[in-house]
Image (cartoon, rainbow, N blue to C red; front, side, top):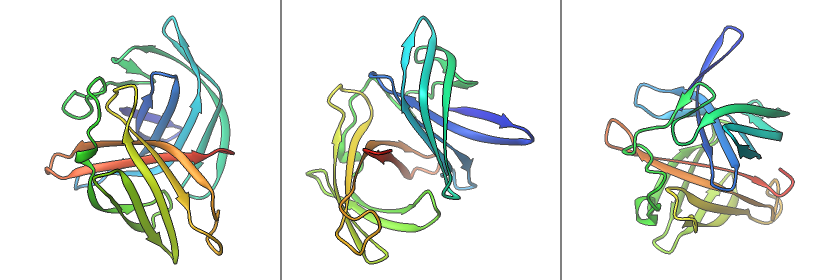
Amino acid sequence: AGTVTSGLQSQEFQLLVLENDQFYALSGRTDSAGVFRVVSFSEGKGTSANGIFSVPDARSFSNDGSVTNGSINATFVPKTNIINGSAPAAAVLAYDTPAALSTVVGTWAATSLYGDSVNFSISAAGILSASFAGCTYSGLVAPRASGKGVLDVSVTVGPAPCASAGERFVGIGVTSVLANGKRELIIAGTSAAR
């Protein structure tokens, strides 16, 4: 986590590079309640070697609906720092401790990248269900098989007339406890076409 500056604007970011060099990055601001409000989401598959992380085909999705392609070349020290950011404390994200599905079971009041309120639930079996704007969404949430502190998430959009009807989105979920004691869950993913 850290801060990046582009021109005169400064934004917070949260970046996760998984053991397979897939990365997910979120940019935004933390509000007065300690909730991270996402304004853009980036992802891609890279390579890491000798302290260099390279992604030739990164893709960024903004809350204004725009999609930008780019590349990343960053220096890093594993589990310590990358792109002006530093690793969070283990109390925030214990990356080497397997994620527990029990920490996300229940009903969630969420906000989409586009600012829409979306309520969804996750059962003890890891079944995700949601309804938004007349469409249903179903999916699965499970601890990552590699034993990392990350959840694997997949969500399938319901039938027409839903936008993206039948499309499946795959990604990750990360949960942490905020300073006010409430739990935050961030889910990010893309379709096969990205």
